[in-house]
Length: 520
Image 1 (cartoon, rainbow, N blue to C red):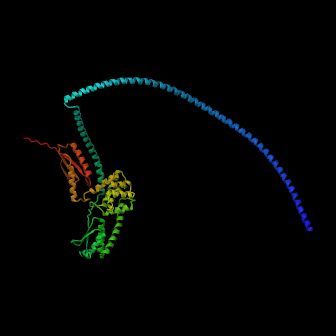
Image 2: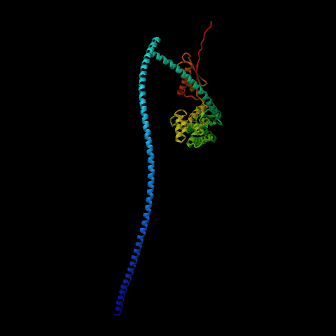
Image 3: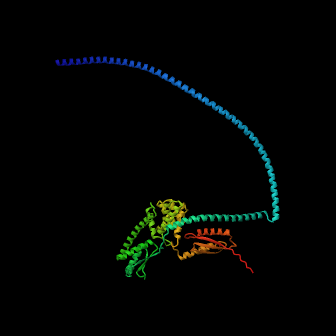
């Protein structure tokens, strides 16, 4: 029972303590709220006071700014007024000037009207005079027709014919004078450059043939080369693609074929077979294949050596290989590589003399016949084939054009193309550089003479100096001196268009008149 009482009293004490504490905290909170309200009121009053001060300051600043802006506006207005006054004065002066100009124009218009009237009067008088002149001319023409016995059209035609003949004669004389002067200057300069180039590159050319001779140690070797029932010689010809001729010639066999590369492969392979002593079909195929690979490698080295000899660079490997192949190609019996190197030197020397790019000239000269080294399956002129190859392997456009244009298959686009064509002709036209069959030589001379003979007034023609010159004898009654000059030019132009020939051909027209009388 006592425990319950203690518990009740404890609870009552706690409740009383809570109530007392609540009342005390309420009083404290109320005091704090009152204090906060006072503080807030004080801050509000201070803020209102500060706001009034700021307002006064801003009003003062605004007034000052307004006065400042007002002064600036007044100044600007005054300046503009002054400008307007100046412009008004200028405008007034311009108006006065325009009025004065209008008055002057009005005066000039009056003068122009007077002049027009005077001009009309003069024009009428002139027309009357022209009519009188025409009547007088008509009367004179009738009198001239009666005196001369010719109609007006006949007299006009006769006069025109006379004038045309005189004009032709004067033109022919002028053309001859200009041509002679141009030839004199051009020949001197061209001869100097070409002779210098030839002197610096003069070299011998050995004429290529279509056969090679292999010497034997003894005639017994012929039997071993032929083999049992000819199997060795058949295997050799099949592997090399050439003909092996074994005849009664002592201690020698002949290798015949049009492809110099195959002939060289066959010659080296045959020499190795004879040195080795083992000659049978399998060994023949092995040696021929090995020799062919070695020569193909040698071709690359030959091409690199040719390029290095000319101090060239950056040549595509495929072009290097084709340049090396030139060693085993020939043109009219002239070794193609030697010919191309000579053309390159000639082009370089002439380009240096003329102030052109020497490197491009040498490249074009070296590669001008590169199209001849392409497989025969590729169709077309060798110049165009070389042109396409040069474009394919990114050669300079000037080099490509010179290659394609050296036989005039395409149009020349640079002076270097002309140099390549000239150097090619110089290299091929030198005595001993190329060979020409007797039949083709005779046909060329006959065509040259018949072409010159086809011109009217030609009596006889003679091709001399191995076709380097044609002399044309004309009938003096039909061809005068001026016409002879014109005929020489026309013959030369037809030769250029209709014939193919190395170098150049000189055309000489001879006109001779003999007057004979007998004294009795």
